[in-house]
Amino acid sequence: MTTKPAIASAHSNIALIKYWGKSDSARNLPAVPSLSLTLDGLTTTTRVQFDAELDADQVELDGAVVTGREHARVVALLDRVRALQGPGFELRARVESRNDFPTAAGLASSASGFAALALAASTAAGLSLSVEAISGLARQSSASAARSLFGGFASLLAGSEHAHSVAPLDHWDLRLLVAVTEEGRKPLGSTEAMEVTKRDSPYYSAWVAHAPELYREAETAVRERQFDTLGACMEQSTLMMHASMWATRPAILFFTDTTLAVVHRVRALRASGLPCYFTIDAGPHVKVLAQAEHAEAIQQELAAMNQVKRVIPCAPGPGARLLSDEGTPC
Ligand code: DP6
Image (cartoon, rainbow, N blue to C red; front, side, top):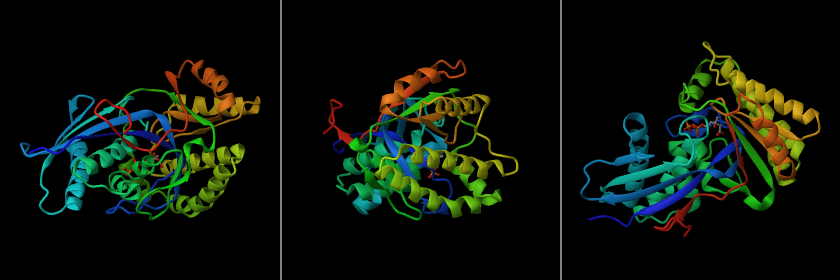
């Protein structure tokens, strides 16, 4: 016996106001509120089918078999779906997932990955959950993934079980230009890095104390489309988050020479009259926020830097959705 397969796609989201640190690690609840923009690029597509012939969950990412810790994280989500379906539901699943961008390189692959998996797995199991419940399922695997269920601007409040929508994708015609620096896998995953920060950084408590105020200012800036205020909040959130990591011993340092070169470039472009702001996650890449009318000029400036490998321009995108067998949205 097999269930009908379900295919879902989800896009990465980039936090304008960062989530970093958990109030409850066992339940994966965030210690600070975060605010993100879901993108129209950086897509994960995932197919899930439960099958009585299988004696273990099989997981493939970009055609390669997934084992170890990554496999365990997928199985944990599938287990939660099986438990929701009821005690009699014990079928194992075949999971096939594809990213259209480099995995685990600081491009938020876990966000799009677990959002697509939560939607595909719950649908394949015959559940028809609310978007909040699916966001909650994704959040337990990776908190940033909770936000990718929603299109446009989304937030995940401190201690919250699921994300919610702040504004739809057509609210504001912004662009995020992803300046890819080095390819390759990052040295430390965000889950581990934020646990170390919480445990060892004398600045962690200051980060947690200041984050709500920054969140409120940024949420108002999004609602009222105040670009410079949003940009200033975004840069402060990024640098406060990284400063909390730099204060551990040894320091957790995701920046490279190129990261800093792009940061300086963004500040110089701004000083020359091109409005743009930077944000950096748990990796070396720099994401640059711009208004649509200035995006092309800024993209060209970034792409002209010889340390920058490529620039991926992204616009606001939709939340996770189910696809037909042909790959079109249902
Ligand atoms: C820097 O969502 O990957 O991208 O909940 O432990 O899986 P876990 O962490 P994860 O952390 C993302 C951190 C960030 C900031 C953000 O997306 O808000």
